[in-house]
Amino acid sequence: MKIEIEFRPANGPAQTLYADLPPRDVEQLEADTTNPDRADDVVYIPSRVKKDGPTNEWMFRIGRIKIHRVS
Image 1 (spheres, one colour):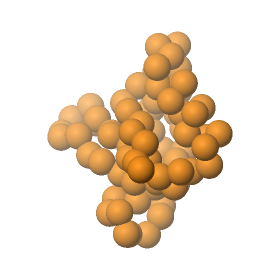
Image 2 (cartoon, one colour; image 1 turned 120 degrees about the horizontal axis):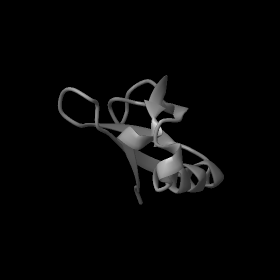
Image 3 (cartoon, helix red, strand yellow; image 1 turned 30 degrees about the horizontal axis):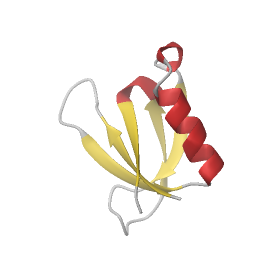
């Protein structure tokens, strides 16, 4: 499933990254990002800076990301 990850760093502008994840992982990320108890937890998400760029393993604090499904 294709998603966009809106990342809001502590300093600087928001960034959008792109990922292809299994539906189960997307559902878990969506649940985690709406749970305030998980805000300081860290997740590793294989994602890209450009839609067609190389995939890298990125580390995010859950409270700093929003997940958007892409059709």
